[in-house]
Length: 234
Image (tube, rainbow, N blue to C red; front, side):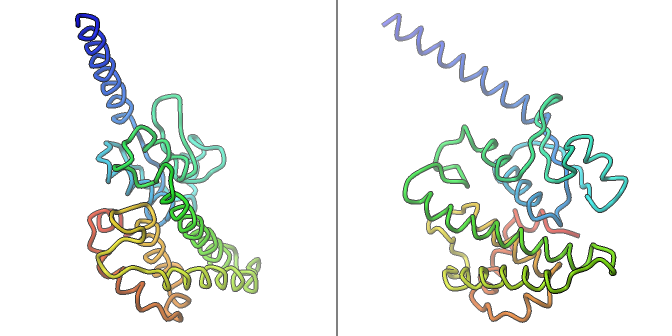
């Protein structure tokens, strides 16, 4: 009995120390990137969902002054960046989210760990990520390059690919107030909220040309979610 009690105390002390270390790590976290970036916005949503304290620096890659600061933390010159302490900075939104959720219980995770739910999640998330990638690339191709260096035909091809994939989400879209994977909020719901609002800003005409009644009805409801409202681009 004494041994069992001692073992229990060790576990409790270890858990306390781990919580202290985790809290120290959390307090020092800094997120770089602005909400117009769908990838940065997703990371911010996950941080807020889990109540993780952090500083957010709204920096834009397209702004020369901001870009210098971004390059100090990520030599690739890309956002999001999550600086987790003085030495370490994580890049790539999926890897950041996996890090944030690695020690969470399954029921608390937005990114499922295993089982049949994971297959469905990865199927949806991979396509959602593809929509983001293609839409961002089309946006840059059609508006960020100097006019004499733009390639409209390529931008059109990019738009067609995300439009076709978004059409698949229209087919499987849940009713307003429901979630894509069923019982609870997952990263897919945040993916789609970010995608729909990014497209409304960056590819508005292309989005308006599509017949998406179920997605628009779902998004009208999802737009009122605090995670969506609190991270909406200006």
